[in-house]
Length: 355
Image 1 (cartoon, rainbow, N blue to C red):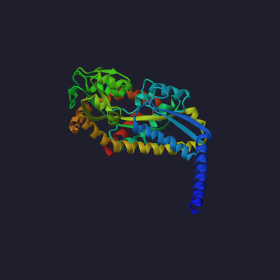
Image 2: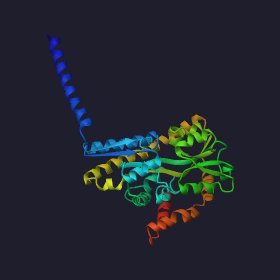
Image 3: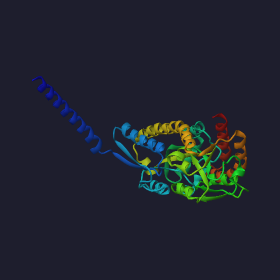
Image 4: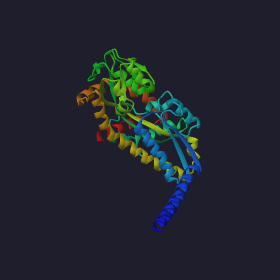
């Protein structure tokens, strides 16, 4: 009799549990949110993709299910430029991409070389309230109908190649280097290799691994996470941790979609964005040390330049001419009569010296 009672209790508990699970399942799966957005990303970067998924999860949590954002990583909704155009036209509400000048007229201003070299400097420059770069890129993206929400991290860029360790600008001799459509970064690299016989070739990021493996190019710029997660360490023999570029991607919302969002849900999205962004900073900062060890263990030789050697690369980069030719004209057009170029340079110099 006792065992029968225990069985009945067990059965009742199981039924109650089943009812609860059914309710939870039906509530989460079949209940329709008031607002449904799609969020597209082009890359297979595990850490960054996890941060974007966290953002989406937090939006659902903080909105009590009223808003759902579904994350589509790894080019599921198209390649890099396709994502930009789909968000701009509104067929996709959100996206993450690099604001290249080929797709965003003011994209040339997206992180000039030799201005940010560590995570503390990045956090300061991209602060949502006072950050010189956040405010600048908000205006740049606003011109093409996009609302800048937060920043996705890539971290510091170094130079990898398969010919020799790069310790001085002269080591670029006769190398063929892969570059992107980031005009300022290309100009910086070209200046560093000027007079050495170095050439550059624009190759899509998605094709970079094969281009290095087949010898189409000798080298490229890359980041620690890509060296590991996108396996660049397998097709590069040498890597110089030059930190001459900083990778910061823009997480954006179609402006019309943002304007139509109720104010309370805007606050939810912004709250989730700040948490996901903080996670981006910290997870990449902590992971870089592990990535360095993994790269070293892979057989790819890492070189850390001295302060004096970095100074040689900076001087060869001739950044004053790059600013004069590429950055200043657009800045002055955006902010006429405000002496904004000098204000930006002063703030970047302050950040560089203090952080």
